[in-house]
Length: 327
Ligand code: SF4
Image 1: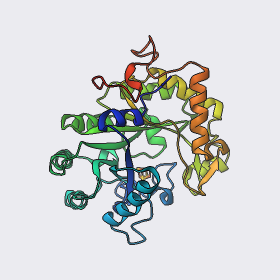
Image 2 (image 1 turned 90 degrees about the vertical axis):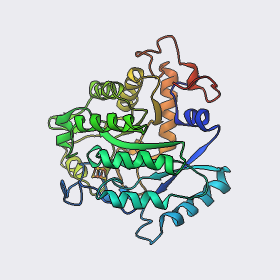
Image 3 (image 1 turned 60 degrees about the vertical axis):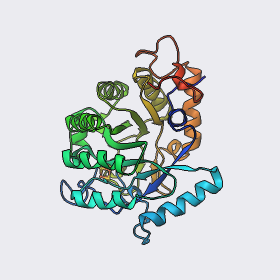
């Protein structure tokens, strides 16, 4: 039984097969690191883990593309690809810079879609108009924004030094949707707060906030402590303890039941970069954790939307073989 509307199913329904994401580093920075908002970054952010390092190695976007495309073509026989501008905040800075980066995507072999990682406070009308225009100009099936929300609770966002509030995310999501740009929200379970840690109700509240917005997809992350971060210092001082695996499974399962069954689930857990994980140990093996999450959903008979519109059972579109109208 398919228990979530997984990205793999959605991609197959939309594009007729696999579309492999290629991570690209365009050399952008982040306003929460370069001093525009702060130099500290979000409490959990490891600057070394936020970029692929390919720009530092002198690789241009087409060279990065060829490097990954060659690997995926050989190993997965992939023919279609999404350009994923992943590192840092890729709409930060002058619009001309964004325009130049988008122009470099023109003509990349196999390019089917563009996905742009950014912060909601790094978008304005002109940049969104540019993204919408580029979708037409590059003949793309989809342009999407991967935006960090992390939590819908403004007190939590302030404590983790996020530098924007939930309303900023909501405004950016609506403006993107109005221009035909898809939005994928990133959320994190187990964030630290002034008096401890967010709990399962907080994660459900964040999911309900997203349900009320024109958000197409979601990435769930379990918060882990990364080396060299402010969170690692809190952890060392005994002021932050990560979720146990059991806590995460229960929080995620409950949140999924409240999530709209139409929202595409891109991820169910985080993936620490090599060498950065301090705690918890269970977060270290992404594939094993993914399988554990799947087993938990099975054992508890959980499916996405079970408490939000899909009470009768998982909808037909959860299956990659679904041929009907997309939700
Ligand atoms: S917005 Fe992203 S890159 Fe910037 S500090 Fe936060 S997590 Fe790091």
